[in-house]
Length: 250
Image 1 (tube, rainbow, N blue to C red):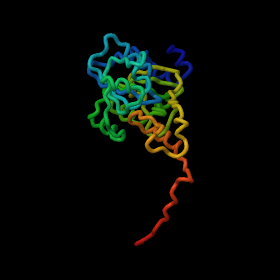
Image 2: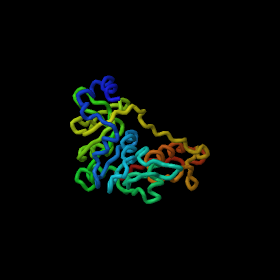
Image 3: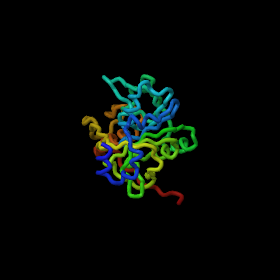
Image 4: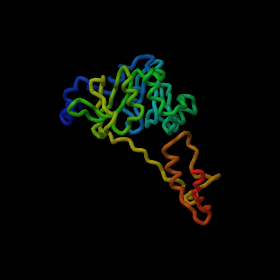
């Protein structure tokens, strides 16, 4: 597989000494390590699954992440993981684990997380991320999921990356030199998408007050605002007249 990948993506050739399998990559994780998992659309599923397959599990390893997809496997609706999770967001991926005490929710403004990672209050020893192909200068991009991952990458002692040709390159504070990446695993999987069913059609029209069609799905800032705006339609038969501006004392 390695030679084929190198032939198809020449910018990987000079970094071939870092190419490995997911199993070999996660073998560098040591007992007691604090492991950061990349966010949302860039959740490195192969690396996470390889970590879960280690038998016996690496003792006292703790996982930190924001919104993820597949970071916690489920079997018949029950979460399956060998490691404690600390999440800055309770999404569908960790909701059941949090209810069972397998995952902890850290109630914090996401804007505060990078500085806490930088000063070590939130420890990061190893970062598992997914990135784009490197360019001719040897830089990969964090792609469409930068958020707190950038701070974790700067702080981590070791960086294990999935390099995905389908991950787009984005500009800004998204670039990571290949020299910072200890091991990389080539993957060619579609970038994760988040698809939600539309809001309850019965809630369309005047914005509901006491009987909201929006389910209480825990802390959130994406779906609720989106669903709410679909209900924000002015019913001119019941809306009060606009209040005129009064300029007094100017």
